[in-house]
Amino acid sequence: MRPVWPLRILPGALLLLAAGCDDMSKQHKENPYASARSAPADVAQGSVEYHDAPHPAPALTLALLQLGRSEYDAFCAPCHARTGQGDGMVVQRGFPAPLPLATAPTRSATPAQLYAIITSGQGIMYGFAQRIMPDDRWAIVAYLYALRRSQYAMLAARPALPQAIRP
Image 1 (cartoon, rainbow, N blue to C red):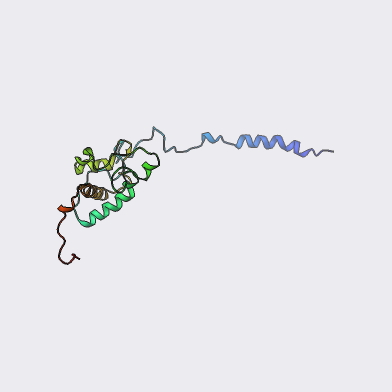
Image 2: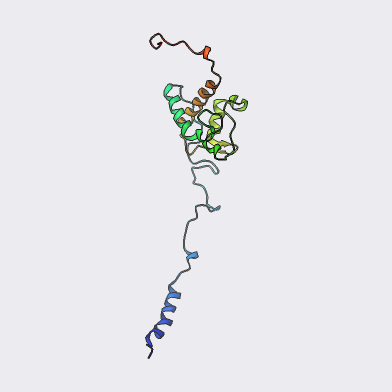
């Protein structure tokens, strides 16, 4: 003999499930990628949220160059290589090569133009405004000048070593 109670409970359970179940597509949810979302009032539409305002260049010091070198090694060398030749590890793995830093267009760029390129990007290079602080971007610009200058350094033009350092 079959038990009768499951047959009596089943329609009631189905009715309760159908009545109490809300469709998940009707739930309140926030889509961060929705195009109708407006920007906060204090941020201009289409701009980076922070660190993209004009920032004056700091004074050139040895500490600034050292900071520039470490930031360049972290953010720029994967594509541009530590030498600035444009054959970094990312390029060796198949990414398009950037221009070497010693070529004419890059060599003739002003510090402000280099700062703007680091901030906003150029070509397929994305901007680093959200990743690198303004003072650190200026440090990279200072290091780029030192790196470019080292590409054309002549051994005969080096400054004389102080007497205390000579062997």
